[in-house]
Amino acid sequence: EYDGRNIRNLTERRKLGFFSCGTGNPIDDCWRCDPNWHKRRKRLAECGIGFGRNAVGGRDGRFYVVTDHTDDDPVNPKPGTLRHAVIQDRPLWIVFKRDMVIKLKQELIMNSFKTIDGRGANVHIANGGCITIQFVTNVIIHGLHIHDCKPTGNAMVRNSPSHFGWRTMADGDAISIFGSSHIWVDHNSLSNCADGLVDAVMGSTAITISNNHFTHHNEVMLLGHSDSYTRDKQMQVTIAYNHFGKGLIQRMPRCRHGYFHVVNNDYTHWEMYAIGGSANPTINSQGNRYAAPMNPFAKEVLIVSVSLFLFLV
Image (cartoon, rainbow, N blue to C red; front, side, top):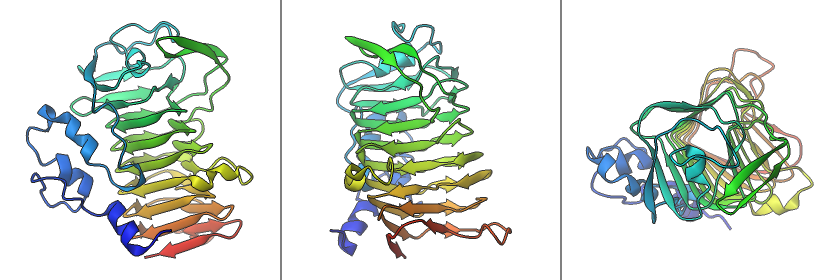
């Protein structure tokens, strides 16, 4: 059940420390105002809000510094590469030694309890495979530029130190969340990929998508595999403080079956519609700003193909 108190507790300021500088964004107030944040990077794991707020990522592990931008061998990745970091079986907080552009030969398959923390460097994952979060838990993706992702697959790819296997074709999503839980995607810029920018399907839940900048893309965000896949009724996703910007067309997000809290987002551009729903989702739209396009045939904020429960605040 979702009463007003429960929704408020999921999204309001959580008394997250004395470094608050009063921006009104509880995530930013939690860490950005600390001038020594780089010495306390793991504090970020305490700053989450919404349904993905309990994602700890690699908080309880060591730091791993990515020093090598290459991805020469997806089966036997070199130490120091991002792929070598994310497949490890232990918690890791992954940071970057310098600015880099990472062109992945194949999709980057995450293992559980990982944080990819791009703060302090200008890190692009672009022009190749992108991020797959499949059948894992506790992943934080923060501070990356992810764009121009391509379909990959029909190849062997390693997903842990002890296992690699054949991967069929990946669609070319920027971030694909498949059968996973406790996921937080925050402060990234995402654009111009072959399929979706963020897709969460096949029973994924406990997800927060926050403070991201989405631009130049058609089908932005899919939450729910299909109208017939009823396991997605358990899906709970918070979409908060994002900017849906230039060059977007639809699916901001497209929701099926589950419960979706869409709160304090800025919708400044779309060409077809902003939010879509089918298969009886519950969408709580709260405190968003919608600036509809001039086209009189594309002013719909919400497109519904089957009944849904909608709360507008």
